[in-house]
Amino acid sequence: MTYELLSRLGEFGQFCPVSLAESQELFDCSATDSLEFAAEFRGHYYKMSSQEKLNKFLENPELYVPPLAPHPLPSADMIPKRLTLSELKSRFPKCAELQGYCPVTYKDGNQRYEALVPGSINYALEYRNRIYICENKEKLQKFLRSPLKYWEQKLPHKLPPLREPILLTSLPLPGYLEQGIATSLIKAMNAAGCLKPKFPFLSIRRSALLYVALHLKAFNPKGSEYTRKKYKKKMEQFMESCELITYLGAKMTRKYKEPQFRAIDFDHKLKTFLSLRNIDPING
Image 1 (cartoon, rainbow, N blue to C red):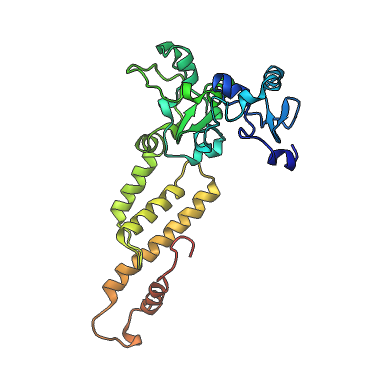
Image 2 (cartoon, one colour):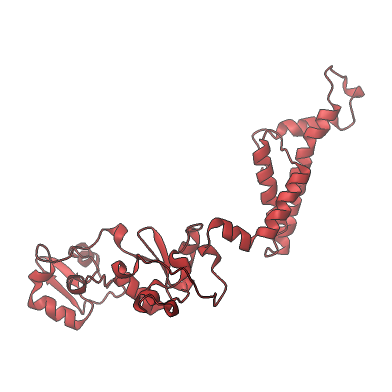
């Protein structure tokens, strides 16, 4: 559609006013630029979902636009939106509703036990700040068009055994950590507890968190060899900086010592220690 046509779309935008009026369906016509099923009325353009809907609109257009239209188009935040895989991932740690089961299959199956079918992450959507995962494209379209029918449901107490591994991004945060990185995290926290790292000019808490992060990167089984080596070196450099505090604490005296009476590398390590103020310990 040209800019002029887009700017003259009626109150329903790209949604079919006939579908909304007759069955409260949000039929999005934006997938096509064709004006085959479009009509002009009172200086505005309206797009219909089919020839049948177009014929109905042309016969009595007043019935499908304000003030006689029975249902207004919901506000943007009340219109369901399909999520791409990257958008779904960015919603973490938000959980999928119904524990990832398809809301459309469950509702259309009269909410029977047999109708509990896991959804596919390729058919995810967001509605009223909630995430739903549908079984296939057809079920996704049904939810997008009739969200009020499918959005608010409750699972039975008894659930079927998983037919496939559950999507980690649909788990609550503790469950995600347990299933995804529990072993690696335990090792990293154990190492931090043994070494007790304290980076110059940083708090103990931040020092420990940075060490755990570096450890996870350095020993990530899914990371490349290059990435693991890179972060192992960063972790070693991080610990060398942490050890400066122990060294200087042991070598520094209350009274001033002439340079010739100091440990050979004392001045170098003291200079290195002072240079770490306001330095990013990871990228500095």
